[in-house]
Image 1 (cartoon, protein in one colour):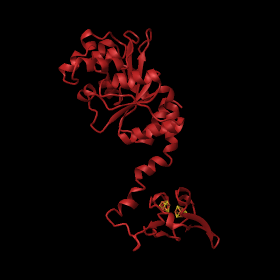
Image 2 (cartoon, helix red, strand yellow):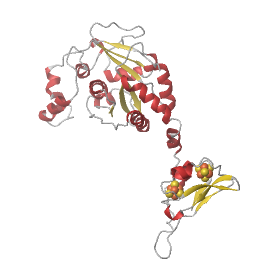
Image 3 (cartoon, protein in one colour):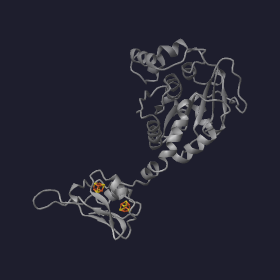
Image 4 (cartoon, protein in one colour):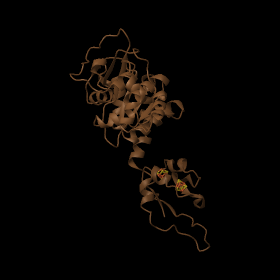
Length: 318
Ligand code: SF4
Ligand code: SF4
């Protein structure tokens, strides 16, 4: 699958607001790829992501990096002693003491100065280079589905490491490149103060080696799970009843739910039987036609899964 095909699937499955951004750290000796331009003014690395997600391909040597913290963390330049000391965090009142600042700096993922010669950023489907990571700007729900897709592909849960500091450089590029795992970031002071990321958006980065498997998994999830979640299939049957007292028998025990299956509507697909966690429903044959029968209503937990899954809206529970 090429990057154009992957981008198409990602955009359609997640309904992305912004293009995924391909990011590469240029190794010593590499040449500026065709189709990239150097920005006319220096930009922070986090700002360059915002410009790339709007359709621009940028070549960013050290002279084009406005943030010395970011270019140092990315291994493009030597970080100044003043920045390295943690002093500035105290001046900005972002950290309470030099000890705390130095502890944060020591635990921050970084590349050694001189490891790389420039950054490249471009919309994934237009990238004229092989990215190291792909960075997404997402709503939490879209990030959730990328996590689900990675788990679908690997069976693994995510193990994010992030902070509110050095978001776009340390957490989204260096961390992801170093451990080869998806990482998340909520942005940082600099990234939010200098760009247009919205309050309800976050970032997620994926190492390029994992991208295709995640995209394939997302395509599978898009066949059922994603559209169902977006239709909120379990919400309405329950929310419609919030506020009603759950009926109880005179003896104090919970009343057996009244599960009604409209036999005119039921098409015998068996989805409700398959999804019911309590084996309340059973597919039976009636007059030569498969139909659902309520066989153990006393076991019903009122989870409404059957109601949400039924394609014919044939089930009501009272
Ligand atoms: S899910 Fe709906 S249509 Fe399918 S068997 Fe159950 S009641 Fe019938
Ligand atoms: S509400 Fe839940 S437990 Fe009750 S019949 Fe439907 S799926 Fe089964």
